[in-house]
Length: 187
Image 1 (cartoon, rainbow, N blue to C red):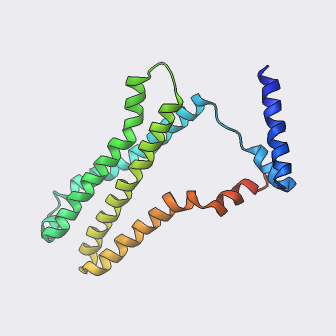
Image 2: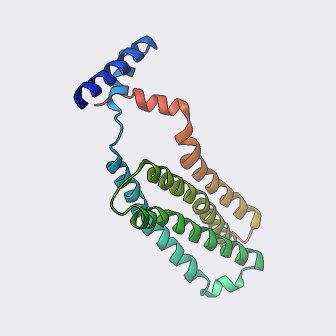
Image 3: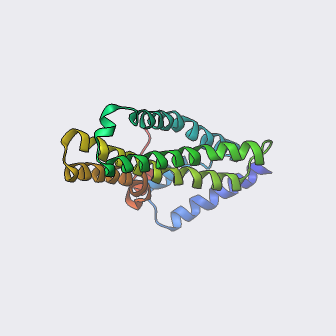
């Protein structure tokens, strides 16, 4: 029964693709995209959090250690508060990255749900903004230490923020790129 339904769905998709005037290469590329089963989606989401967490924790550790460095106390009050803000933002990112695993373990320990996938995706995406902001702010502080010039530091911090924004938010939402990746022939 499931095979017949799957086959019928595939036929409708191919027919719709033909009606829409898609070229054969586009149809072939669309056929290569397959939805993930719900348990695989949940596993991938949790693995993504597990993969990024050690890096964030290492960054957080270095941020905390910096306060005990002699040079830190030579910074102006503004830069010390900027560093404190960066620490708080990275701590928020850690909490957001860890939240899906904590939620799943407590609220749905023996099952997976589409609602969890939506919640976990939102939490992981939400963690990216405080993380990129915290990194950019700390880059500003480091650049002030190295260059002694706030405007150069602000330029560098803003530039790295822009790089994160483009790669993490703009690029995945670019329709032309999405179409191009779907049409890319397999080798």
